[in-house]
Length: 317
Ligand SMILES: NC(=O)c1ccc[n+]([C@@H]2O[C@H](COP(=O)([O-])OP(=O)(O)OC[C@H]3O[C@@H](n4cnc5c(N)ncnc54)[C@H](OP(=O)(O)O)[C@@H]3O)[C@@H](O)[C@H]2O)c1
Image (cartoon, rainbow, N blue to C red; front, side):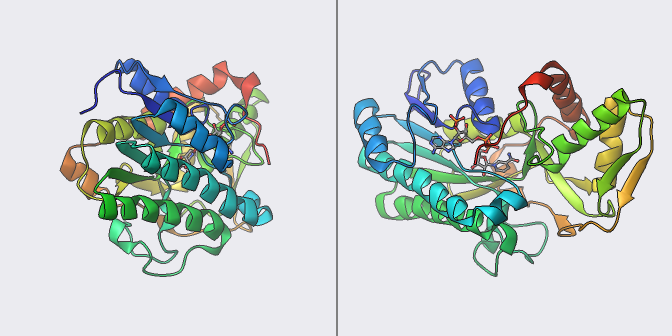
């Protein structure tokens, strides 16, 4: 049984996801949260990770540490995306198993599912067809993490579980236009266009693809739910189950930001996959559901952006 002073190691606590998890657990009264920055403990280094586990013996590990990035970074650094992610998660999972960590929560992403899988994406679709080639390096690393935790459940009966979040956004997001995801990039573009006299905003593609977005604090709630409960299966999708077109997303952000100019769709740029929606019925059946709807989440993210414009995250590669 876990209690509020159970030692919980949050790997990647300075990231958008790890930071939200840390805030959530601290607010819930967890007092023994263990953290290390990558310069204090490089999770790619097996000997250092083992020594850390031997010394600290965390009862729970939440793995929110990863080499993350968009299509360009995945394309330019395939080896790092494959190898570093496997190193980070293998070192954590293996050290956890060897040091009697009771519970391990592994975070991946929806890119583990096949490129042409039916929508909404069910957990059962894992490994039924080919992956999206642009991020297969990252996806394959994440799939091996899911499988390692599944193998530990099967062989040792331990509570090692994987959560696959949909697209996330929220406070502490990356607003660097070279490397950011679509939602924070739009917030920044609409904001800067407004500041410059409501200039037109040009966005990529036709605006017709459909996407799902989850506020990062809701993912943190899902992690807290997985902490409080023993989930009966090895893999769970985490999302809202609601998607919208990129055009609707742009209009929602435009309104939240207060931009009054034109939106220009540059249809010479690629649209990407037409729809990507998670089936979240497994988490719903257990009792978890998101709380923050998109409009509120965007308003909260924009408020944070306004207060932190000097602190955009630099992406290190
Ligand atoms: N963001 C999304 O939309 C999204 C969607 C679905 C799933 N996820 C998943 O959530 C997880 C975290 O994503 P994020 O968006 O929070 O990423 P992030 O903001 O880039 O944070 C990643 C964290 O990982 C740590 N890290 C990276 N390499 C490390 C190393 N070698 N040793 C130790 N720590 C290392 C970094 O620590 P330092 O800061 O100390 O360097 C950083 O804080 C990933 O598994 C990702 O797949 C994210």
